[in-house]
Image 1: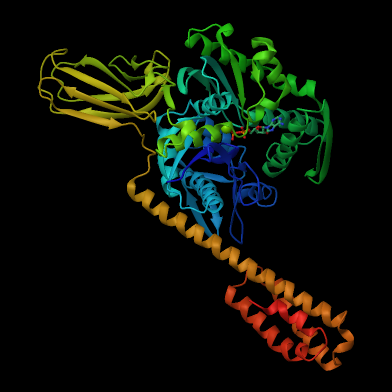
Image 2 (image 1 turned 120 degrees about the vertical axis):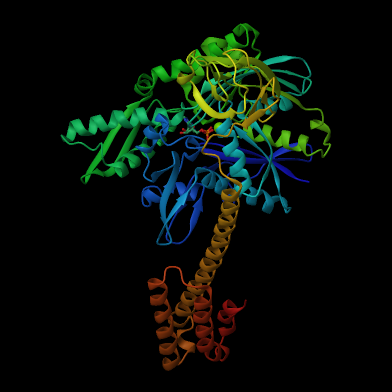
Length: 617
Ligand code: ADP
Ligand code: MG
């Protein structure tokens, strides 16, 4: 059984497989080793990856990106509210779940974020199936260490919609640690700090590695910090400059701002090697061109607090692990934004240059580790991977809200998973016959300042004075980091439980519907490809025939024949111009008509059979 590992990133995704005793990154159908996590819906069909990314300026409201920022979040989440202001596509509020609303094939279509992530997963799965020539059903998918329950569940659902059985969701930095640990090939114990700064999220994880045992000591980070934020700072800088210079206000021009953002992202990447660069967007706003330059130093000033905060997070992670920086043996850089020289310099200043690993590919490490774990879990018994052991931790404290609104922490952050923790509590009011448990995650003392995960109610409690009836509450976190809470009334044995998945969780019925939809989309894609291949063939043939009779074979043909062929060719060329995406049968018919006219003529002229070869199937 072949099992793949997938890094489903906010900006880029990557798929890998472990075979012949090593990890192999699987390129997409365009030969790229990482696939931008972009999906674009055009009049002709659906595009995924770089081709979708290129659509953004012409197909702004139907090109989707950064969808992982929506995964498992509610519509009223301040981050969702802030993000949607920057996007060209629209969100709707469906019972406080953000959904994506676009027009597809002339009709409005609403997508759950899971469905869009599923499209990316499905395209990676297909790439792997084509490359390896097997059917793939199982995968390990990575998530940021800081993803909460809801986000993890939503990722598993996305996998199911894509037709994948998700064997495990594993934290991205842990996967990167596996990639590092397997590459290192020594058995001595090492403490490794994984510093993963991508497009949308930032994770720091400290892992102790010994003999293929990966023991996560602490994890920390920010679910909303990455390269996109650095781009935003530059965009805002240039918007003010543009407004000032031209005495205008382009802040409502979303499309213009997006074009500027693309230019800024490219400039940012150039600044990782050059010390200054130019940013240029023609006709940015009201037809006015924009051209300016920026130095690396200015870029660093614009983002100084972001960059410095990354070191603060590193310090927090060290203190959670009760470690001094001198105990860290290696710092592994993961994510595209670790190419920024300032980020590297800050890390070098903090840890010393020798400790920074430079051999691991920051774009591929996560998929690489996921593939190794996938192979390990599929029991294929491959020698190098057999005895991999991972022990991960809970990224945020888990607990419940007591009568006074305090957060009662049951599972402390950085507790090893899987874990099971008990807590005892009692009724808080006289003659209370039911008790509601509200579950939260986070570090703040008041439950309301933490993230609400879900609630459930234990009913049928014997009426008694406050404090008489007791409950035993159990928090279980499985190896995927998914939490189940059970509470039992001690005197009656009555219990209730909740697997935390929040209100946004998809129902089985919804998932089934989405699986069907995903299949339909795939079929649409196949048909679209066939259609465009047929059109391409017709177009090639018609020009080949036309060029032959007007060029090299012009003398071998009678004028009447020539006229008839040219007229037919012109007719087809016009038809192709007016029908951008014709039905396969129509294109085939045009091809047959053309052949019918050409065959008797070309059969009788010198070298004519050369041309007729284009009609062969
Ligand atoms: P994610 O894990 O969020 O999908 P990636 O690890 O692929 O993200 O990183 C993508 C981010 O890295 C983007 O913001 C991109 O602009 C940034 N990036 C990629 N290459 C460079 C570079 N050479 N210099 C600076 N930033 C870069
Ligand atoms: Mg990543």
